[in-house]
Length: 356
Image (tube, rainbow, N blue to C red; front, top):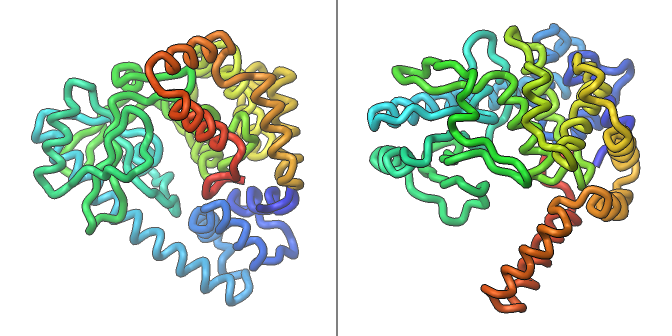
């Protein structure tokens, strides 16, 4: 895991401003760990800087970028085919996360962006028809996928990635249903089909909620550099962000602190123009400093995570007690202890791929 100086170097280089005298093999290794190598290569190419790098770095980055663009084209074709098929079944899906970046019109924000899957949201009543439509063109349920709650994963062996069909976007303390995600969105053309693209504000809300709450980054102190750049692109898009609306989407407590921590991080690391009121607060300041300290000394994660959970419990204590009491009435104590151990591990184990 990179230390703070390597974190700064990766962020600067993905921004198109590599530090003078950079050790490119070390920098590429750090970018690989953060899953931003192709994005970094795309930005360096955009600024005409690849030709100035050492020969081995040039060759590697050009190869990575070529492969990333091939994969992106495959994912785009897969997305367009899926949307067309869903439209034939009377379903107009909504794009979130990487699918929203891939499907956005105008200049490609997806250059170099590696996608593992395509996340589509459909109204709950439309889910059976959507699933049947995709199965009709060869998709099968992926029963082994560790997909998100309220999502059904489907795949075809020949495709570059799988598709996650969501009924809503759900995290700890927060959920956005289809209508909420679609509010303020626009219809975009994909092949011969149409899909809903959420507003930049709702896309940013999903990114923040996904990383900070679903992936527990708020408590675990991790940073997903890929998503930080995705968020910065949304903030700098022509439509801009409705900051008052974004703030209102996150309820008081840990969710609001998680939003402010994210806003503070993206403002300090990337210079994103975030209003001061959305990056203030002692919790946001403490969590940002904790992230920078943890980037230098990863061993800080365990005690800092325990402290974060005690300070801002993911589930309010009274709700936790009620939940445990309910589960004790409906399950064996041994099963309950197993689930508790599994949930504790999600907080205390090492970062997922791509997170620092």
